[in-house]
Amino acid sequence: MRRILCGLVKTMPKTPRPAVDPDLSRLGRRAFISAASGAAVAWPLAAQPQTTSPTGGGTTVPAIADSGIKPAQLIADFIVNFDLKTVPPIVTERARVAFIDTIGVMLGGSHHAPTDIVCEMIQLEGAAPTATIAGRSLRASPQLAALANGVSAHALDYDFTYFAGQAIAGLIPAILPVAETMKSPPSEILSAFIIGAEVCGKLAQSAPTLFRLANWHATGTIGTMAAAAACARLMKAPKATLPDIIGITTSLASGVTANFGTMTKPLHAGQAARNGILAVQLGMRGFTASAAALEGRNGFYDNFARGLAQSLEPFRDLAKRYALAEQGYRLKPYPSGGLGHTAIDAALELRDSVALADITHVEVAITRYAGRRYSARYPTTVEEAKFSGPYLAAYTLARGAPMLPAFTEAALHDAVVRDLARKVSLTTYEEHADVLNDSPARVTITLADGRKIERAKYHPTGSLQVPMTRARIEEKFMTCATTAIKPAAAQQLLALLNQLDTQKSSDGLWPLLAKS
Image (cartoon, rainbow, N blue to C red):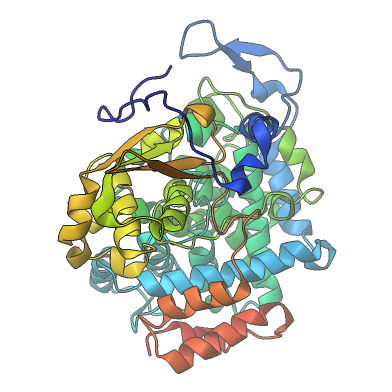
């Protein structure tokens, strides 16, 4: 099991280890074992009939189809009966901050190449201009506005992490055009987000290793169902149609991780947003689907989570336990793949301790799961740079935190960064090799005189354990938003979002989202 990552990675030699960062050593070995095992299996599996896994080898998984739990019906009850006044205050607060973060990065990505191409297509479609496309003067139908918004929100890879990656990257992009056309008040906008996020959380908890051990992208799969649940609330879909709407989404769910590092990764978020709206519009008009498409034979779990642990028990806790309260999300301080942020944090702390000329080798130790998502090669495109271990480590040590300027063609051709990247290797972080729900990392620098210095990080900046300050959140918003709208409009928009939970009307939001 101690195999080399990416075919290019070598195992770290057994040498005396320098002292690690205090924030890591304080946790202790027991805490790490708990974090690695407890988080990965967040929900106990109910005693259920067993079925042989189609993967072979005698492995068995629970047969959830006969559990008696009907997730689509429980989701329908949750959507219809949800009352914002009953949720814990922390849930509403995290929903509000999610809008600040998502709208900021959406505006930031609204004029990047993936969104430009999508908007060219939208213009050719000639759809009714009823909804705002964030950061653009172009308007479109709710479906197409959601498509563009979703691509923009994920284009920079700067959107927050929820469960397995950015599972709800398409949620707010779908909510905005529907809320605009439905004239939804802020209370309903926040309610829709919470509903979508909680439904997504239960879907993730029901197959806790699905997006870590299989190669489906949560953003385009369960993110589609999250968007549909949210939009069904905003569009006031009759309760009887909701199982069909959820069933429709199981056939629209898609997205493989082979497309990470390309424009198709943000397309997953755009498709989730668009397809969520499509499912609601179809279902409300009598379009049918299986009410057991999630849990039934040949359904979502049977196919997407084939051979992996499954349980429908989490759905019993809808409206009782809130994932936004108990798990929350991780805001991103850097616009790159989140699995590498602990390594960036560690490299930043080492940066002032060394001269670049003295560095002979940089070893970045990461989990096996992170190694499946990160490349050991130097990038050839801006999209690849967000997932290149050598590039991110070298850029951080040479130029500082990899912010938006790090992901440009000019930055990729920086000779200093390129030369240093040749000295960087990725290896398995043996102590935490099999951790799935966190991404601990250790950076070790070898100097010309033979000395080694290192830092290790378990939780990244932006996590609940190492939260970003309000000032840093707002600075990120302004940096991103002002690439698409004027600073005065960005300030107004930020002020409105900061008070979203107390506003009576959403009318002031839409003009501020458009290009100014």
